[in-house]
Length: 436
Image (cartoon, rainbow, N blue to C red):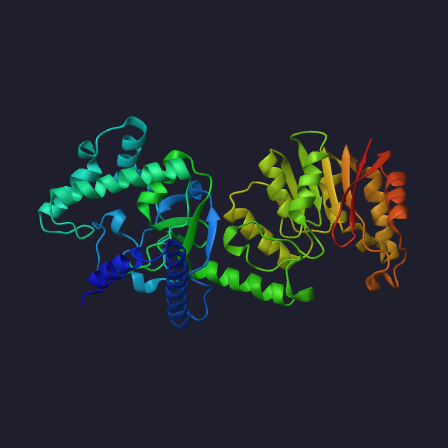
C-alpha cells in the first residue's frame, strides 16, 4: 500500500474517534515524526545547530532569494529553482550562494499573490496561474496535479490560505502529520553576514509580506560556512565565560539561543524602564562598556545616534559582526573610554554606564582618570548601575563605594544634580537615572 493511501485510511479512522482522543493521537504523531526527523538530521550534521529549531522573525528580513546552483547547472536556471536540495538541510555550505541580487518580491508567485490580495485579480489572469497550468498541460506535474480542474482546486486552497492567515493570523503549520513532509514551515538560509535568504514556503511568505504580518515562524535550512563558524566561535566564547554564558543577549535571532546572564540581568525589563525615563525620544547616546551592543541596537531603533565603546577586543569583534548582521549604523569604538578623544568635545543626550564604573575604582590611576572623565562629560542624563559592594573582585580595590556613596560620587564630579531609582533587578542590582 502506498504511503498516501495509508495516510488517507488512517485519516478516515481518526475521524471516527472522539475529538479529545484525536487531539492526543495527533499530538503524539506530530512529536514522534519531528523527533525522528530531528534525530536523522543530528546524526547527519552533528556539528551544526538543531535544524528543526523554530524561531520567529519579521518576514521583511527575508528580502532576497537563495542563489544556489547545483554542480553542472547553468545560469539559465530560474531563481525560483536555485534552492538547496532536501538532503542538504542542516548543512554549513561555503560558496557564493548568499550573494544574491534577486529580490523575493521579484518572483512571479509573489507578484501574483499581490494582485490577487490587493486588486482581487482572478488567479487565471496571473502569471503564476498561467505558468502552473502550462506546466501541468505539458506533462511537468506541479504538486502532483494532472489537469485544469485540479489546478483550479489548488488555487481555491490558496484562497483559503489567504483568508485563514488574514482572519486567524499566522500559525504554526505542524499539523500535516500524514503528509510525507518534514517541518512544513518557512525555510530560510543564512548568509555569511547573518542575512536571511528565502529557501522554501513561498506561498506563506508571500501572504505574510503582503498582509503585513509582523512575525513568522522559520527554520534554518542551510547556514553559510562562515556564519556557522562565527556562531560556533560565539558559543565557545560563552562557554569560557563566568557560569558558561554571555553577559548580554545577542539581538540576532539565530544567536538568541546562546545562554546569557538572565539570572542577574533582565535586559528587556531594564530597557523598558530606561525608555520610560528618557527625557527625549531621540538624540545622541553613548554606551560605556557596550559589550555585544544590546542597548545600542535598542536605542538606534528608537531613533538615537549611538556610540558603543568596548575595550575587550574579542567582545568587540562579536559586536561588529552583529551590527552588520542587523544592518545597524551605530559607531563602534574598540578603546578604553579614557582614550576616546571625542568624548570631551561632544554633548550627549544619554550616557549608559551599566555595571562598568566600578572597574575604574580598582586602581589609583584609573580612579583619577574616571574623575577627569566625569568632569568633562557633557550629558543631560546618565543611567548608572553600580556593582555589588561586597563582590570579591573589589577586595583590594583602591576605593570601593557602596550604592549610595557611588551615586553621590557621580553627582559630585559631573554636572548632574539629581538621582532617581528607576529599576531593580531580580538579583538585587539597581539602576539609577542621574539628571540635571
